[in-house]
Image (cartoon, rainbow, N blue to C red; front, side):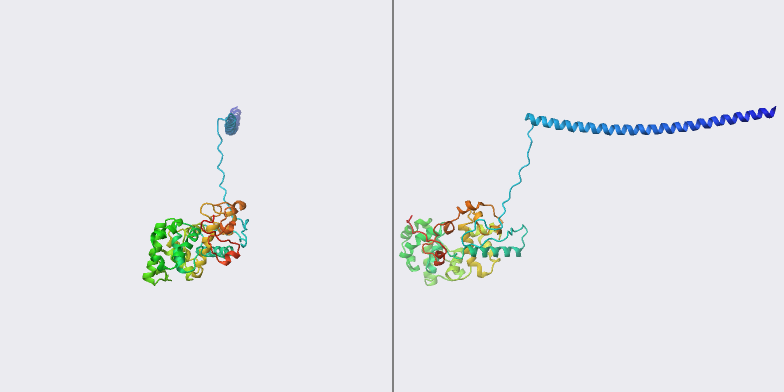
Length: 370
């Protein structure tokens, strides 16, 4: 009996343990299921949040676009346009309005901002070669027959044109042909002759003064040295180099207003002082080129590359010029800006060299001829 009761108790304990294990396993599964359910719920929440946020953002964006469109439609909101890019004029690879008798322009070689000294020398010399082809007859545009007439005419050319000087000097030299004659002249009579040149009183004083200096210090002869010429009244380095280069054949650079303007446009130098310009440009060329270089640059400045309205569209060296576009670029309009023989008009000399006449140039009319 005792054995049977013990067996029943053991069976009952085993059954209880089995139920407890089943209950524990069931709890574990329920917890796992609950955890998984929680994870899914969180994911669902996050997903819902993202979707909702996206929709909200899209809704706001759509609302902004709609609002902007409505304002634009009503004229309540002005839409700003981006400023148009500034158009940069580019020189043609070949001259589109080539002047008669000129060589075609070569490829465009616009100088970079960091142009090397060697590149500058090459470009400067190429410009001079091109101008030599355009103006093979370039010469001093003052009428003269001897060094005395040239130095007087050059002094008179300050603040006026060579044309006006050439129209005035025939009367002056007819009455006072030598330094001795002009040194002894009556200032009032000289003033009357020089009146058309402007600043006639100051110029009268200069030409009479330099004539006296020539007579007293140089035996009535114009000296052929720079240091002597600049001692004469009214004679500076520019005038001295004109006389040296054209009356004595000694190289010199004439830095007048045209020369100063062009060498800065071409970026040969950034200097503004004439003496510094002379030194800077002189370093780019052999000394033997200096006189002809001066003629080429000055002629180009008077005929094509004007101060106010450069004729860029008719310029034979446009591809070499960093300032291309400052003036008129239309070829037909640019042709109308050309002066003297390039524009079909008379030159500045009453008695020009034969080479100039052979090239199609015509003499200037005398004073009062219309």
